[in-house]
Image (cartoon, rainbow, N blue to C red; front, side):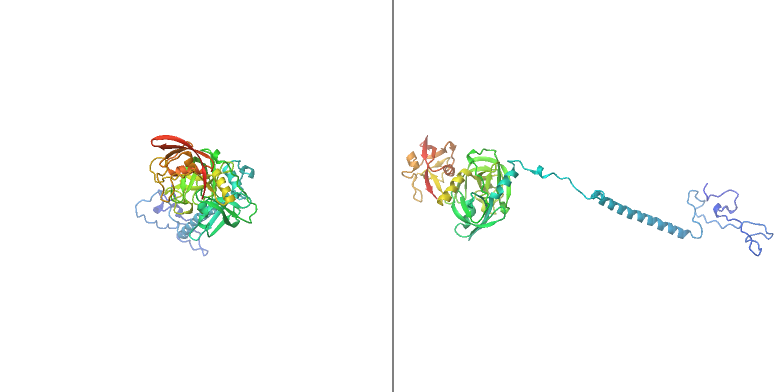
Length: 443
């Protein structure tokens, strides 16, 4: 039964715990408050019962607050409860932070992470990293500044005497007047001078003096290159020196022309190695290497989304789309030797003038003299001695199809003067094969 429930037979029905014990008499013998005149004890009158505004008391309600100091007690209990809640929140937050800190620090100790040893980081011979490490010291970065233009490119060391091979179009802006500055892989910077250059092959040799510890690159054999061979290119695309990219040889004997106007002066004719190794403006003149770190080509041109040609001196061209072209190193080596030894390169020729406007299939010999006065077939020249005539259409060279005049020039330039070239010729509806011993022409 609840302590506040009424009991039958009790006076006034007051709650039981509100009853008080009898009080003793005062010291002067007077009866205690509420006593009878005869001294018999009587119960003190009970305090009036609190009003019950809603009828009968609720037997499940909490007991009423005790009289006297009930409100301060409630305030103390509320304050204690609030303090306890605040203390719990502060303790939880602080405890969580300390726990997280201890967890992050490994329960309070210093953190030490496992790491592989240096031996595990060695690179296998033939890997891209191994090729780059061996050849980067032999690659240089070129900045040219001429009276009307400036640009950047790449080159590589040919010998310990400071000779460097690069593209002609890299140094051309400063060839006659201006400055050519070479930066080596170690950071040394030197001024360079032009030894010789040739626009037809798009190659140039420059030289620096006063540099020790040069690391010439090893030249390979581009005739032994096969489609699918892995290759590595090093250069400074968009001025980012020491950039290494990799890919494969996508094609060989890819005839391209770069620079100038087709059929005009300043055009480079390249029997190129095609690669998908990413090369961009600034890679020009840099080495294309095989898996053994041997140079097999000189990066020279790319085909971009805006066309093909000589994009390396122009920031307006698009970047790599995976179609790059390199001058085969066998051709580059031959030209470099001529530029160093003689100051100029000689070109193989067949002694005829081609009709570069011919729209049919093949390379057509002019029918009559050109506007410059050149004869269709040079009297006494290689073509004349082989039996070529004005109006002949050459459709193949050494078994390779020839579709236009540029392509025939590319095939001729891939040979040396004195080589024999077999040409398939159409004349008057018939086809014949003639053997031409290539002559030589400077410039």
